[in-house]
View 1 (tube, rainbow, N blue to C red):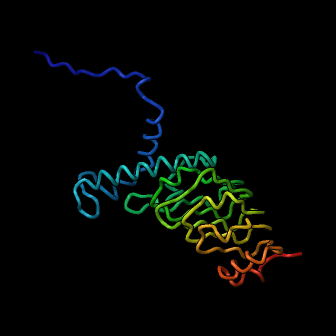
View 2: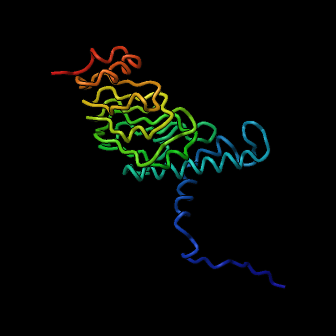
View 3: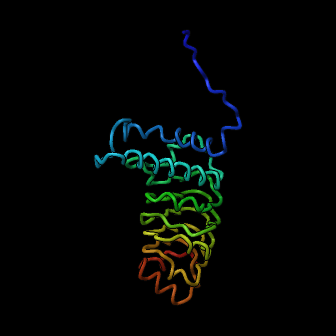
Amino acid sequence: MERKNLKMPVSKKTFPGWLSKFVLALVLLGTLPTILPVGCNSPTGEPGEKVDTMRLALKDSIALLKVLQANAVPSKNLHNYIEFYQGRIQVLKLNNLGLKKFSFDPSLSSMDSLRSILLQGNQIETLSVLDTIHTGSPLTINLIGNKLKFVSEEFGKVENIFAVGFDENEITTLPPDINHFDIRSIGIVRNKLCLLPDSIQIWLDKMNSNWRASQICN
């Protein structure tokens, strides 16, 4: 009997919207096989963990695409924006891209291995936080050398901050309850913080003893 090659007809309707994101995530994970080659288990050697690592890495990648889209960052050369460790995104690098604002997209919370968001040397004037952001690891946020004039109450929705750098901006005011934000360390030298409530000044003294002398007050 003659054997025929059977092909299942493909309809464009069978490709839902999530598929394009999935394909983009696979493109982003082009470096993943060098970390966990096909047929190998995870670094711990436990069977089945390779699948979990791949699944989590895909989740990270899709979240990254959402963050880039929310901030109008081109998705070309995605590898330039991230640093991996064992297939997970740990550093988001968006330095010197000319950004004028930055939105902490809720999808950041699903990147539970993320440790650093680097936004140094942009033109950022405003920060927006639509919903509570809580990553699995303590987070470092570098906003040094931007054009922020204030820090809004919304920033308090970003939790588990190990350190945040606001140095070399144009900040004149801080939220009255910033001392209750989930921040363990803050850099805020060379701004314009000349009139602050005593409670905030005392809090800043504990965080950064040299912040007062560096302020630009005319």
